[in-house]
Length: 183
Image 1: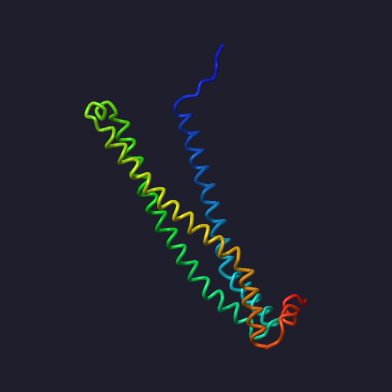
Image 2 (image 1 turned 90 degrees about the horizontal axis):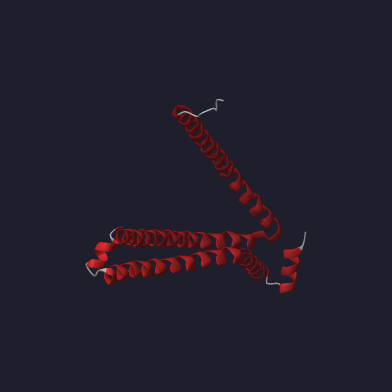
């Protein structure tokens, strides 16, 4: 009775096929993402233009308050994004140092114990961990502030436009609310 055997060349051909399939899948995903980005390149300015036109149609010159609101909010968002990136770099640096110190200590654990360096290595690991968590907590705070800012942006935008409409017309709040909710 003969049983089929797989030879070394068969396995390498299969792995080459799997690698090629994986690379093609990654390339296809990148091309699809690129087409989406190109599509957003023209559609997002168009959407903003249409939204501002409709807002101007309803509120008149008071709609410029919305433009002013986003002129203030976007640089603030960019600053927060830079802070998040800066803290991410520091978190990664301290995590890499902690992992390197831990793996060096574990690879030579018998020499470390005989030289009585366990307390020193432990304090270095804990110091890196403390710094890592300090930057990580700051990053999470910045993330939470960014989420809060963008979650409250629609409500703030309505308040800013409403205040601009009331200020411009000198009318009472009820007429401005009527302008906001009219179709």
